Image (cartoon, rainbow, N blue to C red):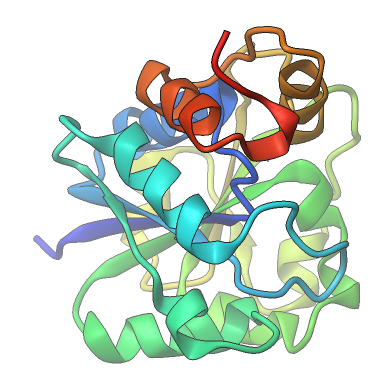
Length: 211
């Protein structure tokens, strides 16, 4: 059986407990061999990060320490410039030609695919796991529009070579990176992995400091 590899991208500014819950959920739901957390270098659709790339990588590595199926991949930061998901997946496909790759996307990102650069390329390269957030409606025609197909479950997803889409509910963590930054700036605890919270305070990131 081909190796199953998840790809979970984002700013991770900072990485928080919600990110980690989604990563673990994807691992378990799809029985992935490993999941790559890929921090964005420069985003195409949103503001730049509040923290430099080196610190975001450090925080991610602290967050995944002791979890052998979670790996940090600096491919977008190493590439430099604006990060485009299709280009990143092309490079990962070159590295992992025989793997079954699954891109992990939030519902909001999935619904925004028509505005992405070369969205059809994603379905040629990978499967997609859509994480339902809040009450956003699912567009079940989106996959077909770009050459993909909805799958009823993990078994059906991996029966298709590439381009399958599966929907799941987000683990219940009412947290975002912006909320975490606000709490840290107020000198309050934020829902971050313990080692990440210590790192943030020791380095005075996001206006936080040691109490």
